[in-house]
Figure 1 (cartoon, one colour):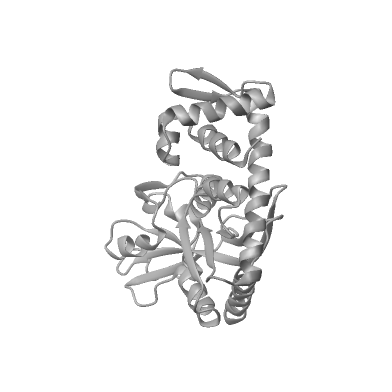
Figure 2 (tube, rainbow, N blue to C red):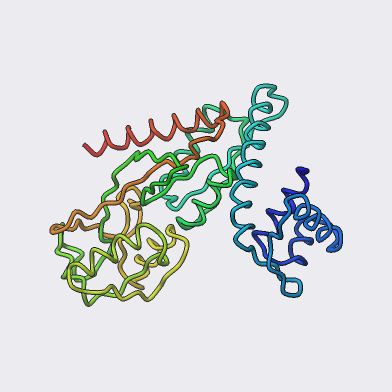
Length: 295
């Protein structure tokens, strides 16, 4: 069994299409098909059910995929460890976030400590983040809500109150706190379902007796403040994402514990480079300081 066979197999298993997998791997379809066939011959069992150029994993394929991904994960950790020990090139930190309101400040503090380290950030929903963490394709995830998994380490680093953001001049703008049910006839702007903050507030509103009516649903939380300010709708905004310069009034909720937990996620078996360890320390220190300021 060869490493190349495993890499090709995993790509085909994820895409379930020979043409697309070959294009992704920059090889010919015939070469890819022959490599998969040799792997199946080595294992003594077919791994796919084939229909034309589509290939769907069978029961044997699903079982082998878990092992193959784990094997490549461990090899990648070894590569990262050697790279870190030799320090022949600058590190790159791979990050995934479901919440980005605190990220600019965190990255600014991290860059002060390690100016030569590059970083790449992806804004994802929870399931997409879990997939990349399990594959070892990102160092950390910054997620709300937290999540538990056998192979994912979850550390809650901050409890972030959710506030109601309304434009100046709104009928509720003069209030410091309100009951959730007072919002039942309002129009909302928010992120799409699948993001932790959206799922949290929807569930609480339903428990209060109404379903929020959204006029805007997007995947860019930072845009919500501008939409509120423009009078398009009101929004649930985390306290950490308040825009003190905008014409927005922020109101607390008085009859429910409305707060999101922010967690730092990582794979339990991942090798942490020096840069990754420093990033974790920066995140923890940042949220500890933020908590002190609020108290």
